[in-house]
Amino acid sequence: MSGPPLPRPGRRRRYRGTHPRRFDERYKELDPERYPEEQAKVAARGDTPAGTHRPVLLSEVLAALRPAPGEVVLDCTVGRGGHARALAAAVGPAGVVLGLDRDREELDRTVSLLAGEGIGIRAHGTNFAGAGRVLAAEGLDGVDVLLADLGLSSMQIDRPERGFSFKSEGPLDMRMDRSKGKTASEWIASVPEEELRRVLGTHGEEPSAAEVARAIRARVLSGPPILTTRDLSGVVLRALGFDPRGFRQPDAFTRHPAARTFQAIRIAVNREDEALAQLLRDLPWLLRSGGRAGILCFHGGEEERVASAFAAGREAGLYASVGEPPIRPSPEECRSNPRARSARLCVAVRA
Ligand SMILES: C[S@@+](CC[C@H](N)C(=O)[O-])C[C@H]1O[C@@H](n2cnc3c(N)ncnc32)[C@H](O)[C@@H]1O
Image 1 (cartoon, protein in one colour):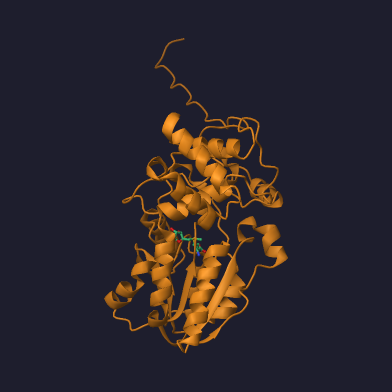
Image 2 (cartoon, helix red, strand yellow; image 1 turned 180 degrees about the vertical axis):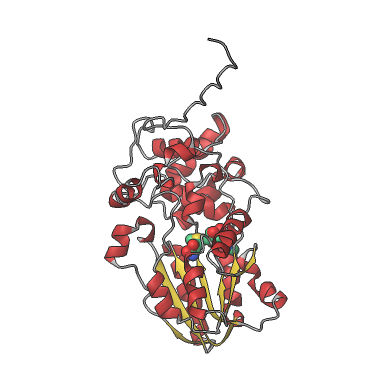
């Protein structure tokens, strides 16, 4: 039989078992239509399914900040828009939501996502340390509600190419704004051991800060460069007495031994403490009289600094009240969303 040759069927892309190389193959829960049961399975394990995001302490944030129809809200950390969506619903069409995020890549995605749902926010790809300039540019004298949900969004963590996660291999970048500054790999290569030890202790609350700092510095001085997330977690695991080749995290509720180091280095690379200090200084002047501010902190150092700035502001008569102690997530929320476990909501009301 003759005739035109039949086109060859295209190769079907296959999921490559339990250790796939590509991000989109690794996380089956990213494709709920193809793997309908996967998200439920991941959540039941105590993990947050990759590609999904649950805003932390959402009902507590709404109850404490009381956004009302027609009010002006400043969400300093839009992330995936979880809180922004609820705040926008509360202030309604007569209100305004200003949304900041220094990660323009994620902010653009979120703005389109929200626009697709009919939610408009006034987005600014900027550091919240410059919130005062944003208000001036918007012609506003202050806001009624301000929220800052510190740290990383699950979207950033779930993208291996951003280099935030010890769970997947990626370049050791960790910059929230990839257009400027040193990557984590470059920072590690240049930081003196003593400073590294201080950073691990202060920002990571790492009890073995000295051992980890010594191991990282020894590798920088005499080993192959630390270029990937796996390179770094390998050095940390070895410093803490684990064998990186056989290491498996038992479950999502047990902290990975490298988690504190990753957190500390991320905070240093992004100078998160400087941004927070600036926000705390400006906060009373960003709020209108009676305005409510909520800051979601994820480690003891942050919580301490926010709580003491709020207490000092109350002493100075700038805040009428300060919520004490900070609000913690319920056991149910901790069970269903491990990322909420360390969250604390600090609240202050402008005098
Ligand atoms: C925990 S996530 C916010 C999640 C968000 N509330 C939600 O429900 O989707 C934190 C976000 O804040 C951003 N961020 C962190 N520090 C920032 C800063 N100094 N200025 C602006 N954005 C910042 C990060 O890029 C990240 O997207």
